[in-house]
Structures are given as C-alpha cells and as structure tokens.
Length: 440
Picture (cartoon, one colour):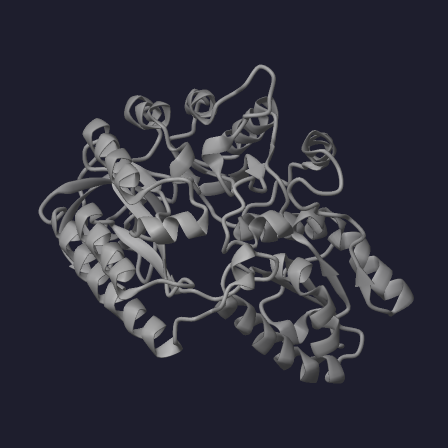
C-alpha cells in the first residue's frame, strides 16, 4: 500500500510539472512516505528526518513533507522533534499533497492536511464515511514498474486487532467500485502492463457494503477476464475472511497466481484471542490444508509477532510448532512494539527485550531453513517467469518472478521486459532461483 501511495503522490506532482531527481541534495521537495505498523519503521524516519536538518540549513527553500501513517499518528511529535518539517499529511489525504506544497511555498509556515481519517465507529456512521471517501478515490496513471502495477481496490480495516494502528490511521474499510477498478486495469493492459497486484489492508473483505454485494472472488474473476493481463496478485488477506470461495478462484482463474500472503501472527490460541484475531491456530491450519488441497504447489507467506504482552514460553513454542506444521515459503517476523491508539498499549509491555530478541532469532533461523528446503523442491524443475529486467548486468542475464513470487535470475538472449518464459532452475542463491530460459 505504501508503495502505491508514493506512486500516486509522485504522479500528481509529475502532472503539475515536477520531475524526479536522483538525490535529495538537488531536490526542491523531499517527501517521506511513512509506516507506523512497527516501531522500527518509525525509528528509521526519525533518523532520516534528523539528516534533513543540515540539508534544510544549507537550502532554506527546500520543502520537507511527511506523509502516511506516521504523519497521522505522530503529527504533534513530528513538528516538535523536527521543526524543519514543512507539512504533514495522513494516508487518507495524500491527494492534498500538491496543494500543501504550494501552501508552504506561499506562506512559508508549517502546514497540516485538514482531512479527517475517522476512527472505526467514531464521529459519524461508517456508511457516511464510506460514501465520502469512495468519492475521493482517484486514478493516478504513474506506476514505477515496467510490467507490473499496483491497483488499490480498498482502504482501511474494520478488524481492530489489539496491536494494530491501521484502523486509526486509515479508518474503516472503503471499497472502490468494481467498474472503476476494471477501467484502471484495462488502461494498464492497454499501456503494456502484464501483471497487476490488487491492494488493500484486507482484500478478502472487499465489497461487503456494496448492494448488491460484490465479493473479492467476483472481482478476481472480472479482472481475470481483462485481455492482456497475464498475472494477478493480491495482498493482504485476513485469515478470518479467507474462505473457500477465494481458494476456488485461485484454483479456477487462469491468471491468478499461486501465492497467498496470510498473516497468522501467533500459533498460540491464548495470544490470538488477546490479539483479537478472530480465529484459533487449528482453524488457520485447516484453511491452509484446504487451500493446498485445491491449489497444489501454492506458496503461502505470513507475518508473525513474538513477545506480545503476556506471551509465555509455552505460547512461543506453540508458534514454533505452527511454523513447522505450516511450512511457510517466507515470513515477515517482528518482536512486539506498542503502537499508538492500539488497545495493547494499555497493557504492560512485560516481555524483556532480551527474551523478545531470543525468540525472534529462533524463528528467523527456523524460517530460513524452511524457506531453503521449500525452495529446493524447484531444483531441476521449470517455472514460468514474467521478465522484469532483460539486461541485468549484461545483455544475457534476465530477472523476473515466478508465479509463486520467487525472484528468478536466468541466462537468456532476445528477451524483453513483459515476456513470459519458462526457466529451468539449476540452483538457489538466498531466496532466489538461478537458471536459464528455455527456447520459446
């Protein structure tokens, strides 16, 4: 989502005559698109903003803006800790960024987006928020990739997990009308894009408030029928809404890739309940078993948090057992950090940092082994690759991704970005496949 947010702001500015520069030292405007899901992400932004102080001192006309979730959650602290920041804009007000920049140039004083990203169930009925924000969706044509494009299908989340800041920074779920999405996908196909990734905080709950309802599986079928689109990906999915209808769509729709990102967060039922995830570990495992039955060879990736308040050693061992049972292709793994507004911030952060670090290192090593072992199943096999780069390092080396979202590097001649090729996998380097393209 953050990548697409950055693309949309970039596109809006390019339309107004701005151009991209390779260095902040030659820039007139420097924008930070931020994330608040993890404390570590915010720490990086604070460090980068500190580095901007000297640059702003050398170039007082430089405009520095902070966008995204951190801007929404930490707006008071940003102006306090980084007074050289000129404006902030939350994730639901990114379309206002060009006007904010112009206001800074005109008034030379800090500015803040005046839009509101309402908390779930607060301030006004969700239906009213839906109607207002659905009307605000825009289609921005700029995409940074040559063959693959992100398409936002919805924003916000209704789940309100106890550790998560997203409902408070992005608001309740708002789905874009399917016709608007299809029009954007058709334009992308006409421009030569071969792959689209459908984006949302919880894509599985797409369209629930439409009348009549349009399910996410319905939308996948409609996108699958767009001529020229060879691959469809999507992220992120909540296990609660990952239903058999979705698995059937992944099985039956030719262009939907065999990859599902399904964050489990923990293998302990007690921790999952405190996280307000809405499912038990065995329910999650049964869904994966059904998916793998319907879609053999599907790659499943996940998110895991260790050190959640009250997590015992037995809870942690349950997570380890779940990882060994599920055998994820890869995982984003983090130690818990309190996030503003989230319910868990009211609970003691009672797991010592050294315990969090030990648990995190344990699952990192475990997942590294599983990822390697799962990848080795592709050795001496052929995989379909969408070429993203046809002249990496030399005219004979290409790079692309398999349908299961593995990076693949291969020797080839006469290919171009956007080609679909079969690659024989000869070896594995890190998480990537190495091989050569078969004659077409």
